[in-house]
Length: 192
Image (cartoon, rainbow, N blue to C red):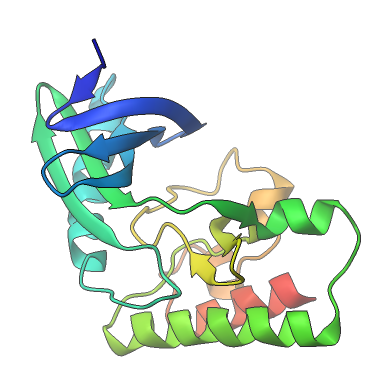
């Protein structure tokens, strides 16, 4: 029997983070493959963070751009909080950078154009990415660039590693809320 979370049939685990576990899953109602992020709820702090994440995911679900991973739904049931997102296959920018093969100038311009288009769409809706990093930018096999994780609030900076802090704007480092200018700085730091 296939394990299920709500109506979603779990296919396999595809990642873990401090927020929870992400699964590739199948939605039989919509007949599509989705990414299912099951949020941690093992401590009072994790429960509160899950509630905040669900609120942020609901706000980010209005985003409709070919360069942003779509958020379909968020729910709490069976004692679990989860968010249903578009399933995307491809290569995260950090993995592409790790190969140290570099990008041609035309590839770099294309990636940058798509990231900027996605960020511009989000900013036009009043939504800002809270922690833009190369790990959160994915290139699909057809060359489409997708920005992941507009919803999560990454929490306090204490205990974060250099890779998580390297792309932050000065106001984010100072603990202030990011805005559209922060995302421009984030993307500039990634390009550098």
